[in-house]
Image 1: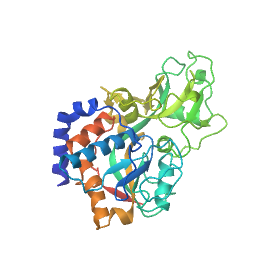
Image 2: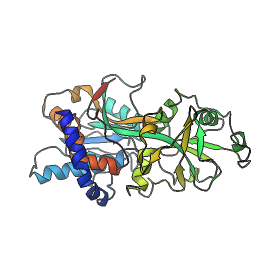
Image 3: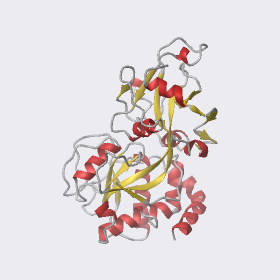
Image 4: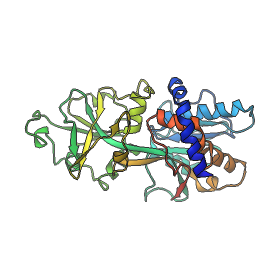
Length: 347
């Protein structure tokens, strides 16, 4: 059934993509307080716009069937007023900002407060045991720099490593023809999955804080700290495409003056984008990544009504992995569908 569903999903996606694009951006914070039975998520900024759009479309799917009884799907932004109460009867919690913060919140609460967390990085050995990382789609991470700044169009993987270990601090160490200017490498805040994925692509790079600044929100090029002609900053390729091609930028989730740059690996220049889509070769390099939704294993494998609802939405045969509207949403927000959609890795 999984294979047939995926084929139906891809065939139907083209028919509804235009409608998805015209729907515009959706706010990730719910307009109403979700009910206790609803599926509610927190976590990564990278996929909050996508998950918000999927929530709107899934809830519309239920309404279109005349279904008023089934739990609805909602998600809370990574940033915003804090603390928050995720659903009716829930604990009041500090708003989780980033994949790691969402995972911690999920692990310390029950379904009465949080049902899932968005994660833009895979499982790590430091993650709590008993969590299922459920595949959503394909993404990649590259570096970005100011459009009219001093950075070149491409850097090698070794040069990027040198920048983030402070062994390369001036553009003329890259190329004597470049300006004599100090490079300003930045990383997203510590709980960011984009930060974790970027560093993992180098084999777990140990960042040198002598020249590297941590702090900006991931994928927000308008951060005042990033308005520098010498800035280097990791960026989700999928979210960049969603912001620029898909038309889903917001006041904060926008690249501003930042543009994506290429990475040279083993003598071959890999461009992150081809024909306004995530490049397949780049996404299969060390800088490619899957994006996930994470569940407590007891909930993911439960056979009660709550567990059944989770599978009906997120599982291999669920709505997200098989409905053409959901496939169109993935593409509109810059990501790529995966055959592994809905399958889980247990920590």
